[in-house]
Image 1 (cartoon, rainbow, N blue to C red):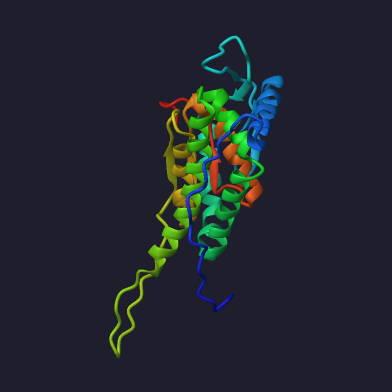
Image 2 (cartoon, helix red, strand yellow):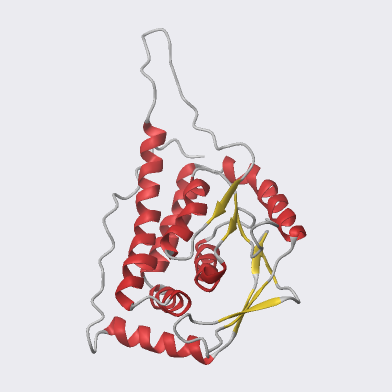
Length: 248
């Protein structure tokens, strides 16, 4: 364990790319859109670090092109929700004991991945599954989510720095503890950034989450989980399930 007092990078807003004709980002995005439309993905749930497929599936289609099939996603049951809760609680002791700067590093890495190699895929997924234009997608699922991850790390540091005053003979200290149990993140269809923020903001602070996205946002939610896995998020910290509201 280090005795250093760590300082995370000061966040700045992620620049919005222009996607002008002939630009590098537009060429990359158009290729990614074509690639995603040329395949039909079978999207699993993410429970305890495992990709969980089911025999029951639902078809995913772009709202603006209902004749096209993007693929299918798993349909979960009550036992999948119980498994997700169990996986979250099993992951909690090690995750909350991890030094805060190590948790921060995972989400800063996720932000870099999203701003870089996953930018086109995240934009394309949001454009296809939520009918957004390139500008609507860019400011939402890339720039805003990158900002959430980078600024939330900064805010986490600022929270931990808040300590009570001490007197000469008394040393007052506050230990910022995670919540008991787990966080249930129920996220909307219209903003990919909000969907990514609601489970990850509490996770940064040592909490664990069960995440249920809106059905029409599952296609892009799975990309968020891909990014978090590549960034090194431990298994079970965030569990993504596709279950109807009353069941969950």
